[in-house]
Image: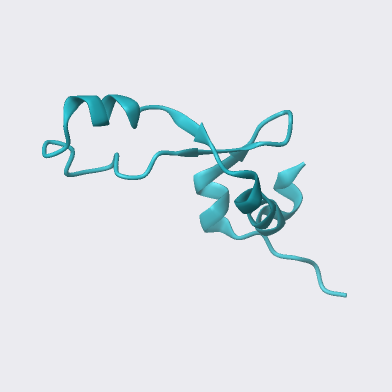
Length: 67
């Protein structure tokens, strides 16, 4: 069987916590922020935990980086 390759795009965007949850940056924070309200920008700061139903596919794509 060939080895499972890591998806490098997913490796750059997601991190696995010590308890196995998947963290990611909120969408809509990189540019065009002036048109968003201050409250919306404030809530988009930092990282959030991904839903568990989507986390399984992310862990599979991360390969050896998902431990």
